[in-house]
Length: 433
Image 1 (cartoon, rainbow, N blue to C red):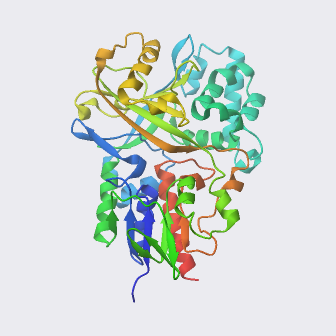
Image 2: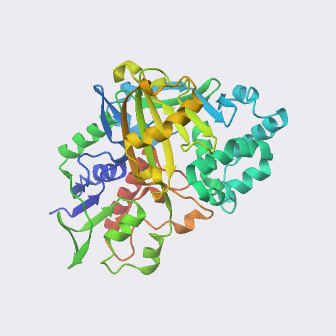
Image 3: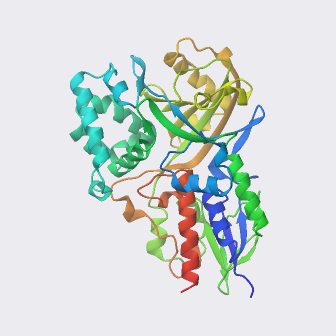
């Protein structure tokens, strides 16, 4: 019996896993505009070792990623390293952060503020039913449960750096999930984070091998801009299909199906979620910039939100004895920084890097790379669940599997894998009715 033909648009981890789950029952084409699969886990050559454009790690609670790594025989390459987190406070410098002991030693807060901060954090961890937080913003909850000083010193700058002017609209559900996920990896002396030695490209390649061995046709360098329909079949430039699964951002999905007669209520949901973009600068340095793996920036005068020194989790010998520093920045696409090339962006950041580490010198910089993503982070407002479109478009054999549909969890490789499995199971279930 001839298998139904399926197109999957987008070869990030969600698309890859859908293809992996469907390939035994369907004839699958996996299509991507880029020249490689992997999506936001894409890598580049860093002195002989693959390195992600976007910093990458997993938590102990990331069951789906861990299970996939084991299934494909890479668990012996998985490393769990205890890392240090820091927090930079305006005009005061960098401090250890993220453990009970570091909170006690955190000089920018007085004893009462530390107590209120710790109490608030315990309250967050004790919340089991996130539905109770649906109608309250992070700004409201934190303002009530922390004192003003601890909120304005710690959480408020982080919300602003992530969401800009929309920070007051962010649901407490989003922050609750972030803190619960991180708590799973917390240790008394830091945070145990997982990384696949040699980059997650090793996992991507294993999935790619599996797909090819099981008949999936991988079509790269092919941008799908339109889906048409004729005789209950869907037409793309790559062929005719019985089903199409879109794994792009919701606005892109809406654009792909604009010529089809889609349910209007459903179509509105595809444009009801807003996003921030992200731009990451990757520096290869002669000297170590900081002792932390992750340094959150609590200074609104600094135009980026976080520094991640990858080589405080992995050995610098893997990267030509260079220290790898990611500069993470979430912003909106109309921000002038978003339009800058890597050299312009570095020049913009240099005085701020010098402010954080007075010893830093541009001569330390041996190499610079830059990567951006237009739809990096969905803006999770109160009652976000009401805006999430179903994975199946009504009355069609069209499916949407986008990171914005993950809730209350946030985007990330683990949840991309989880979403892929769920959507593939939904497709199979619907066909077996």
